[in-house]
Length: 326
Ligand SMILES: COc1ccc(NC(=O)[C@H](C)Nc2nc3c(cnn3-c3ccccc3C)c(=O)[nH]2)cc1
Ligand SMILES: [Zn+2]
Image (cartoon, rainbow, N blue to C red):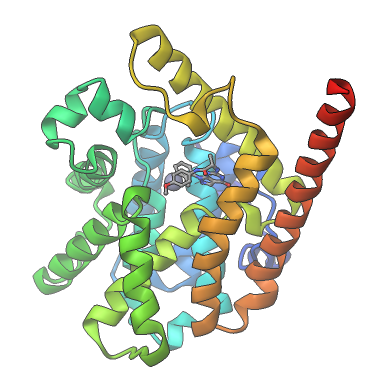
């Protein structure tokens, strides 16, 4: 995989910093080069003495540890990392957070779903899998994603943290563990409520405030598909439902409890998405936009349009059912 062979134009480099970047038009080798560009353009290589070949080995190893499943695959990892990269530039976070905190956020986004099996925590716990056993039912997937990340970093040829100080390493490891574990949606309200309290009096010099913001930024990037143009976002919902239906089919086969919003016999795409946008996305994105008003046009507006889109779809399908019933 010769990554330097693909030259990235100035226009693509600028486009990469925006939430309208279309991930679907790039193949895996090109996404790897674009990830290298993100680490380079944020000056991480000079700041942390990272050699290009070590970064390339690290990115390739990360790529190898994502599975070929419908949603939680390397392309999702790229999307989440690219959204984080775009948010860093849009909010001018480089002037508000240290470069080491930016490295924590981008690397957490990159690693946040490593080796995802395509079956969520509820399944891991109910099916009493090895991961549930190893992590005592406590965010088994997120603990695994983080452990795999540091397993990769423990290989000298992939260790992008090789040349940082012990102090820096402790800070980066602590921050990545917090940010990756924060992507467990079961903790969504816990984390958002903390941020809601801090937001009106947010203090960028306060360690606790910065920690919650970093978790929020990774969370926002993780579930931000609907902030992208509909042509980019909608295929992701189909991929997600495919993965969810695979899980509920397996749960039915094994006689395990079936999560309602995953049951192909129960879920309707538009109504599940309008609920998700109304009750999960909008409150989260609204709170972040209070801290960074410039995000209103970049991520809040597109999500409001997505709500309209799926509400119309929901109305249309209800009317249609209405006529067929009558
Ligand atoms: C509070 O915990 C929750 C809340 C909602 C959901 N998921 C949903 O409501 C449905 C399936 N929709 C949905 N879920 C989404 C999206 C993006 N990520 N994402 C997702 C994927 C895996 C696990 C959790 C979530 C939220 C999206 O655009 N829509 C899953 C977990
Ligand atoms: Zn994810």
